[in-house]
Amino acid sequence: MADGELREVFPDVYWLQGTVRMGPGMTINRVMVVLRHEGELAVVNAVRPQDPSILDALGKVTKVVHIGVHGMDDAWYCDHYGAKKWGARGVAGVDVVLGEETEQPVPWIRTFQFSLTKTPELALLADRDEGLLITCDSVQNWPDLDGCSLIAKGVAKAIGFDARPAQIGPPWRKRQTPDGGSLKADFERMLELPFDHLVGGHGKPLIRGAKAALRSTVDSVFA
Image (cartoon, rainbow, N blue to C red):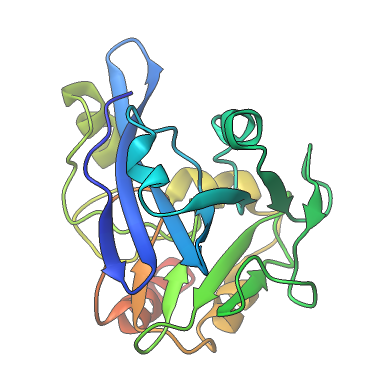
């Protein structure tokens, strides 16, 4: 559905906020990150743009990086551009397995792999400024509810999303936490990464203070 402007957040790192219809009257925003290296593009949390020329102007899309459950547009990128799909072992349709010890989609990216989730979940750490953490649904930054329909705004608030930075998605946490278990150890390990910025699969980028905000969230959620 409708998407906004492709914006550069750091050198060779771009983000685009699109939308997706979840049901009647339920539209929410979703975010794609584009990484550029030597004229090639890797798209993370793929969103099919209404005008693909905004990507063509940056370079050639060669990789689709699947780090969470956002994958409805992966196939379009693979078909349209002949891109290879990168993702964790066990993810359907992956051409290149991605993990902490594997080849990375661009050389200035590191992969973080959750070890406790029910299904494979990754995050990426980009070597930009003091570190940029790229997530799917695990960590989301909602300074506002732009791109969400009126009904979706009400539902988001009802399930625990508000204007706090670096939130752990409540539905994601419920879906990914093993019965009787906890994901705290994974987030404690994530907090050991060197980052100060965040772009999640929903919301908007959080520039500066992302690690401190996530620390506050972890302390609150897993108290």
